[in-house]
Image 1 (cartoon, rainbow, N blue to C red):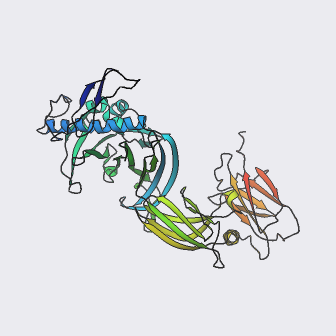
Image 2 (image 1 turned 90 degrees about the horizontal axis):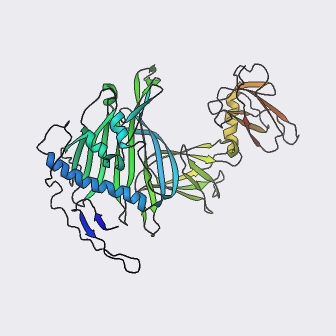
Image 3 (image 1 turned 90 degrees about the vertical axis):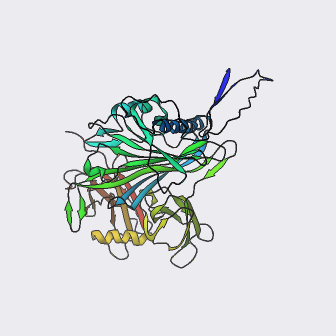
Amino acid sequence: MRRVRALRIGYRPVEAQIPPATDGIAKVDLTMKAVALMLDRVQVDANRECPRRVDGEAAFALWQQARAGLLATIVAREARPAAMLDLQYERDLSGFGERVEGQRVRITTIDGGTTAFRAARPASQFVQTGFATDSGGSHILFDPDAEVLLDDAFTSGYCFSIADPDLSRPREVGLEFRPAKRDTRRVDISGVLWVDTAVRALKEIEYRHLGLGPAVDRLRPGGRVSFREMPNGAVVIDRWSMRMVNEDTTAKLGAMRVTGRYAVTEGGGELARARWPDGSEWHASLGTLRVHVRDQRGQAAVGAVLRLDSTDYLGQADSSGMLDIGDLLPGPYSAVVIDSALDAIGVRLPTNLTFVAARDSLVEKTLVLPAATDTVKRRCQMSGAYSDGSLFVIARAVNPDGTPLRGARWNIRGRSLVTSDDGVFAYCTGIAPGNGAAVEISVWRDHAGRGNPSAVATVVPKDKITAVRIVVPELKSP
């Protein structure tokens, strides 16, 4: 190495000669001067496809500064790997996509990770083929990341201008980007990269997908990618989201079901926590749930396990019956109880505990634990297989890959019905406690139950609830 060059958003680049090393260490002092105006004029060698604009020089000046900020995220990703807790979510949005109806959250731990989010393709491929691909007649959409925007292929394929001011961003200047040449046969993006000129930092990219059709365009498909500088100077992508519009052929309007309507969903993620080898830490502003758990006698339910439905959020009650679940993304949640008797087949006990989490807030609730016997009893009563005093058998039929087998025929002691959507069925009649009698369960993949059963399981009920997981083989081709 002979020379070193330093780049930082909001400052002029600086270069210096690397002096001879002393004891294997070469020390270089660099002094960077702030840019007086982040919209300072520069010489522009723009894409010939882009129209000349009066703000062209200012736009490219801002773009040069933004590129330094984008480069910082890439350098931090490679040079300062961190232990990260990443939250990924999918949300169902109602109406025109203004309200969250439900969400699913997955928690991922990345040890020594370089990033929690990266684009799926290089910039050159996006510029050439667009930000979507067809799969089974549906579009799979893609997000841009820092590396995509920094790539020369993106610069050469897009036009830049200064965005109109946004009153909600009083300290920020926007750099608008749009395709240099629109091709109606492909899906493209246009958007704004926002820069905070006061603290000289990248803030956010917001973009829209183009080319999905007028009906979809009205529902604003697109996304956001936000940047944050960590306490140790590393710049990371801390939040990202994509708003997707899918055709919903079973949409309900009043009492009628109609076709041709659209469902709006949002997928994305957020960096909840990060820790670097130098001891630096960062925590996102997220919500917390605190639950006082009691059993049906009013005593502290020590060791009770609570999960937020359709998520990886989990908590266990301490010796006082108290449990906390933190790092909650904003949005609605409902809680279920994990019972030891039913956990083997993945059946959870529903509760009436629902709440909406918000950033930097604590939600406190009290919960009386539901009884596992009540949950199984209700299933038996629904299928007409219940009598007082009987032991309970509950089973889940699954495919070889572990997914629930819905619509399969089951038979116990002459009682024959079809499994529910979750592959679960229950039998609670005529099984006397303590007699040691075996119960044979037959399952057919064919809901009509023709021919020999696809799987047979034999159990000897001893406890009040016996849970059985039955793997049903695939039908063999003739």
